[in-house]
Amino acid sequence: MSGEAKNKPNLFKTLLNGIIFENPVMVLLLGMCPTLATSTSAINGVGMGIATTAVLIGSNLVISLLRKLIPSKIRIASYIVVIATFVTIVQLLLQAYIPSLYNSLGLFIPLIVVNCIVLGRAEAFASKNGPIVSLVDGLGMGLGFTLTLAIMGTIREFLGAGTLFGMQVYPNEFGAMLMTMPCGGFLTLGCVIAAVQFIRSRGKKGAK
Amino acid sequence: METIFAIALGAILVENYVLVQFLGICPFLGVSKKSDTAIGMGLAVIFVMALASAVTYLVQQLLILLDITYMQTIAFILVIATLVQLVEMFLQKAMPALYTALGVYLPLITTNCAVLGSAVLNTQEGYNFIESVAYGTFAGVGFTLAIVLFANVRERQEFCKCPKAFEGIPIALVSASLLALCFMGFSGLKVW
Image 1 (cartoon, each protein chain N blue to C red):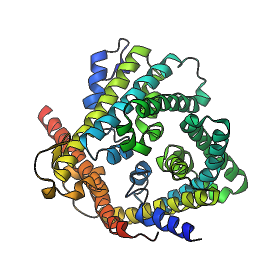
Image 2: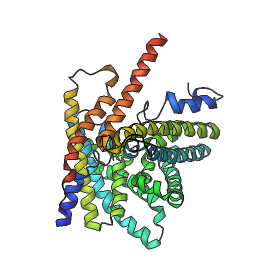
Image 3: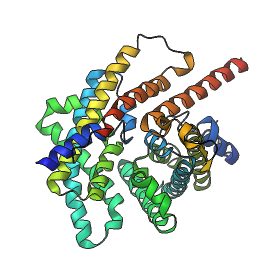
Image 4: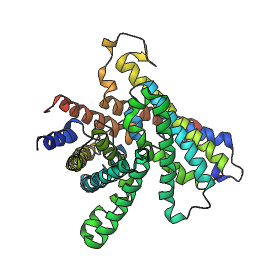
């Protein structure tokens, strides 16, 4: 399975694990808030995904390097400080270079700190594994998160506003406004997770 | 007084934290299987959010004074984590009955994005001290309202048949979607 079970962790497997087999949102059900809130359009979703990926890679790498220095009693607090540092870096970079994305994501950039995926990977993976494999794990989990957000964003944007990555496919008036509203977010995520569960149950039957 | 009323109405109904702004979804989905645990979680959140709004307001003033507002995220999350820990220790000593009632939910609140969210929103909106505390408290009330309503829906769902693929979280999300649809009705409600 994942790299932690073996002595020699398989980098490629770790990467794929994050993207598909243990996809943070669709399989582990972590990080719901940013998934629902920032997937109103595909571009927002991908932007949020990349910001989170950057934080995950940085925090996983640093925590893995420091894993022998951090006393286990105050480890959660130390992880939060590391994560918050990277979030601040990403926040300032976005504000300086991509202000339009910074404005549309708004509140949810500082909230990457409390995204359960980041803290969850720090605790479950980076604190037990070497720096390189932790970095790959961060990249895989981040890409998995980005993939989910991109799928959600594409569905909601297409059904809600009739656009794909900002390009008009059919006239705006025919779109169901509902899909870009909060209730459309819940509905889309529910259907996406149901589809994943369906595919997984089919896969298990096939294996038998 | 008028502004407080507007803030209350806005935070509870028009911009409900869970169903409109997507803050605090994890506890909303995680601890909404039974209505009594949902009430416990809701009360704990109201309590911590009111306190956190007051404390983070003071911290923000300190950050402005020292001209290091870019440290906001780090400072806020540390303050909230410490605050939750302190509240837990205080309740354990002073009010053991309340502590046992809220016990399990208190540590979970640190990672509830509604708390950090309300702290950041308070500074963005430029609320003064009283408005900040009111906003935090009423946003907590809004969270409680949403989670208690949702818990009641889920309790009834237990007895319903549901397609295999939708079992568990997916059907919960679809029902949350319908609940959010109801709350959209409040979006036209503006008193200011």
